[in-house]
Image 1 (tube, protein in one colour):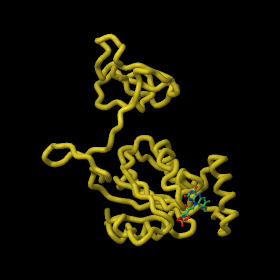
Image 2 (cartoon, protein in one colour):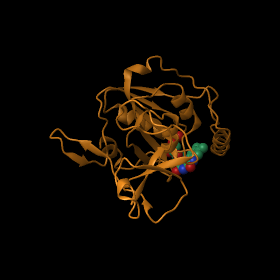
Image 3 (spheres, rainbow, N blue to C red):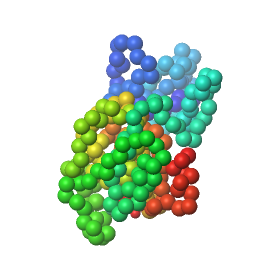
Image 4 (cartoon, rainbow, N blue to C red):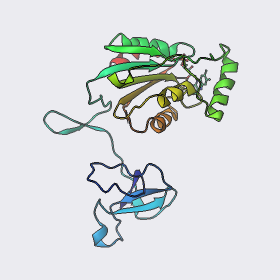
Length: 237
Ligand SMILES: Cc1cc2nc3c(=O)[nH]c(=O)nc-3n(C[C@H](O)[C@H](O)[C@H](O)COP(=O)(O)O)c2cc1C
């Protein structure tokens, strides 16, 4: 069975590369591997074809995978929570409106050696719940980039960014978009944590991946409001 790939179809780099991720943009996605009715010569993972994402075929499917981590003995083990491979300096950066994400951020900070920064918009959101609902929705519709009071001068020194935010309208609050577009996160690991009212991460992980395309996004932690009795354990884990 051919398998869909995440990559867009496009010209390859002509130099030698490992794990190329395909073209940055495109209209068609790659599928690979050949299907049961293909010629024998196409039955190999290097065989590449392209299709519109809504294309359906009886010899085209997906493969379910999970993250794996290299262990010292060289064996691959599946892990629920992939810890960052790199041992680097950690920054906790978060935005919080009503304090839940702030409390989680400080809880995390008390357990690890990290710098911490709260991201605050120059023009604060209303303190009234119904008004902030409207403001946040308008921000999202306009794809706004609210200016932030904070600037991190030495972002290069951080390898891991623990990025905290409340789920707002099933995605990131737009100050997080401003933050992600203000720095180069290539090669850094972003581990998201969010506080939510039932929607968990919503679409926020996709939003982060699009705004920091060259970062590794680790598996994060979503917390219902300020968390329950298991919060400490959840954070430790
Ligand atoms: C503007 C706004 C939009 C929200 N949208 C969602 C949502 O789409 N899904 C959800 O589960 N919770 C949503 N919530 C609830 C918050 O995610 C939740 O209250 C969170 O704990 C707030 O974190 P904070 O105290 O750090 O601001 C929303 C809250 C606000 C103020």
